Length: 227
View 1 (spheres, rainbow, N blue to C red):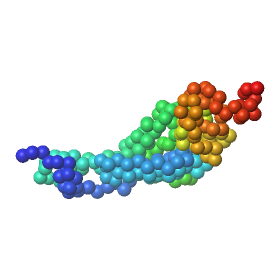
View 2: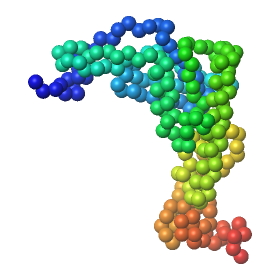
View 3: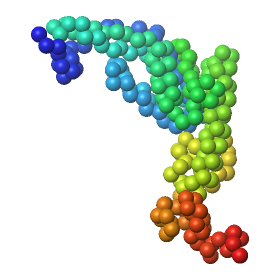
View 4: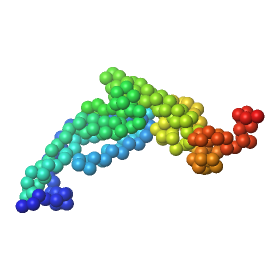
């Protein structure tokens, strides 16, 4: 008999066992951005982390999830339960691991998890959680500072091309209280093509960052770049 197709598997019944109401973990985030993690092989498999700050961390309680193993094409799929701590660890790791400049060590977003369901008061008063909260702040500051350095470099090398600056870099500058030109949404200008090489350039700058030709001599004179 041929093996069942994926369509057959998806339409076979799944019987989930009782869920332990005490099996919980809390994901704590001081990263001021909403995170949506989807894990199609898990049930439940949608995890939404709300934005948070150091002053007011977001708390996202998760429970256990299950995935399903195909044992026999005539039987229901076999449930493989996964504990809440493993789920929380997977959500944090899978999101952060793909971020630019994140090393998953001392340079990463301020997101971590603790066992059980905790309250905002506990986060601020429990010594063990407070230590983790402060550590998360330090790690996030390291990441933000590194993102700002990369943004400065990208902005300079691209002659002010806003497409080279990532949203996380702008968020980093705002969260660190830095007044960066590339972090201001209103400065994003429509790019124009260089008349010499055809590369897109920022019209606020008189010199093309690609071919290095002075495109706008009037502006260059005003800026004192040429006489």
